Length: 492
Image (tube, rainbow, N blue to C red; front, side):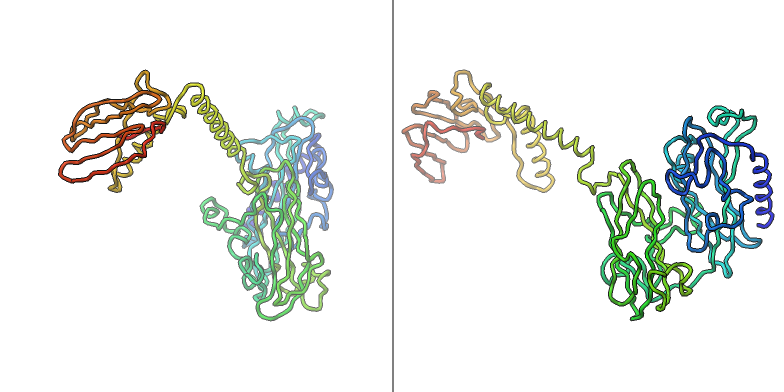
């Protein structure tokens, strides 16, 4: 471990001496979007040079859990590789930093182009729980090969690769005690976020041990706030009857995509068994189309410390409450109603239904269609429905039906029965005879035949109808049949 740190420091010193006179016009890095307080035109600012003394700007204390940098290249885009490394103590690992953000995501996908679009670089430090803590030197290297530097970095002509380092330090403090009396939840009186001072899985920062893909996959996914949700409300309280001051909640997130604002507890407060609200408002950038990670830090202090003065310098020896989650910005997650694909699908369905309705009206009025033929492809749809029905009935043991298409005879009235009345239809039991007498608008329909189960005679107009089944003695009269009645899709 010691040899590795010494080798890194030696390599860092040599590379910086070699690149002291180099620069790359338009290459900017800032601690906030649009700033150049870390690098301007490829030259590292004095506070982040290896020779800089320890300053508040380049020395991070135990209160910092992550750092955000924003890189861009004005003018001609350039292909460059950004890496981050660190040193450790002689015998132990001080931290396990995890590098994230758009720049590293694009590099993992093979895209090394740095252009005028601001890309973020996020470093989660993941300090280990050491007895006495420790300080690590962290350096970020930007490397551009000779050919790319000559094309995009401007004069003087580059005869060597462009390579510079941004250097700062991070102190990892000793592990402090968790305040066992503090709880935080998403409902009043609940502790689903922090229970007895310990952050619950899903709300905690990613574990420092999750340095491999397999270990990261075993982590509980971070809680997600959907795109349409404009705010989140937390409730903080003590569950042991005690009181304690807490400072103003502070946030670490990508400011280029999301602005996080407090809606309450602007100056902290005093914890008690009565829950206090912490309202968090979100303001996403209109161009953001991805989840944004948010870390909320709440410092805890003694009773005699005013809440407005409660910070990491005046805590009581307890670790702050740290909560981590994600907020969707511009992501189509269904929370904002229908997405574009759903809108297109619903529109197509509505258009198809409207066209079907118009076509059905036209076929009814102009083409004199009746029954299932009114609807375009109606008989086919009806046949398919009957087939599906019979399949279901055969599965559940119900009664199935036979579908028959019977045409209309030439000369028959369109206002009469639309089936081929009078045609002989064979069945498993013989022939069925249907006889219509009397006067109707379409004339009289007659037919003859016998069935081995009996005979039936139906009267029309002013006649009578009777049905006789041999052997049963059933006789009925009905004068209610009107010649103007219409029979559609009669099942004979």
